[in-house]
Length: 316
Length: 281
Image (tube, rainbow over all chains, first blue to last red; front, side, top):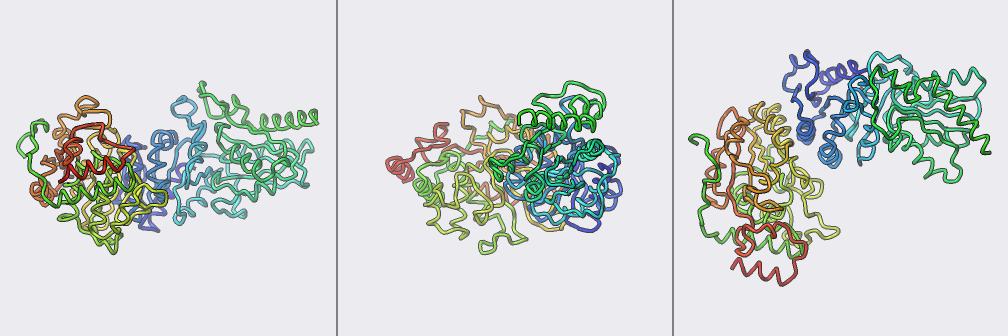
């Protein structure tokens, strides 16, 4: 996904002279072809995130579409005020490509784990927040980025992620994709973003084998949220489960519950939000190992969902 | 400029303000009166810098604010905006009457300038330390397009405490942006007190030179000297320029000069307005 995204910048730059690439301090040789072919549109500015965002804003004010790329934590919280003022206040079409969203950098520790990127980006007016599920979907997203008027955060996963998206589902920014449709309306609805859609599909498969009726809605655009699709699937559901690789405070699950509370009021279905707790991760290892620590593997998602169903039944 | 030296050795010539400088300051007072508040000292120190830029240096079209070939002037120290607002009125970007609406609910003129509202304002500023990076981006854009627009970023001395300014300076120097000019309104007083005590900037000229800027210093209230310096920009063909303007906070209002208490006033009644006008007699 990461290489696909970066290569797409070069591809877009060949198509459109407004496209600029700005990195901070990334891999040697990154987009070397672009650097050679169009050096005036390829920049590597060093570890100066605040400046990089402002520089991108200055270019965007002149009509360019800068794609800024660095590690997710640094492109969000390190330069949060620049993102808010330079990009969001000015409503500039700058793309922020965050390497290693969520728990990707597990072995590197909490300074490198982007656990609240979706939450803080989502809080900014005019910001669009995306987290696609695989490399194929990344191509579809990137093809839509030339004409999107607002600043956009593009959360990257680890790379080499299983391909679960399907071309026939189409792609539009702000339009959620039902990946699996339950037979009936009163079903379990898993809503997920990023690569958690892969785990949610696997969890749904496990539950289906046990006879449960499950839908999976992939929400690649957390903001603007596709309220219509969220409501279509949530209204009347037996249980809505949101699954995200990020903090539960203000993140994707919060976005969904915001809509449910506002639009369904007392008719809100039972909701389980699966995500990270309000704490910095203090374990290392692999991303998959941290998934296990936080209950984000397919088995765990299925188990937590079914447990929640039982609790609900007991209360009822 | 020969060799680096401490900028504080430069003395500001005690030139009397001419009639135009006094007139512009009266427009500032008119604006403060309209809003019954505002950054007094921060605007007054900027007047000659804004005056010379708009009267003699900048290329613009008031009837076509987004004219592609214009020079870009970013007032990065957005709190000094009244000094820019009066020049925008002077040049026909906005009517004079708009000055009277300063900070009112439906005004286009806020306590910090917003680009989406005010014709002639390039970028919304207020939060400090953002403008020079915008300038780097704009200067790169001009270079890509082989457009001869000059990019001038006016910053405060307190503002350049911000680390982001020096990140931008690194980039400007690295890219040898001779079309980029950093202007420092060095009035030596920031909100909390003297810059020498709050966060000393010296040796300031050396700092800009160390960041690969061609740096020069000038009396920021000497209209002729400012004109000469800005007409020489770029000072080097392969580097950005830094113009350090030695100024006086509150310049022209004797009782407010060099007094951090006049950095900003949130209640400016008729009596204060009368005192400000009287000081400009």
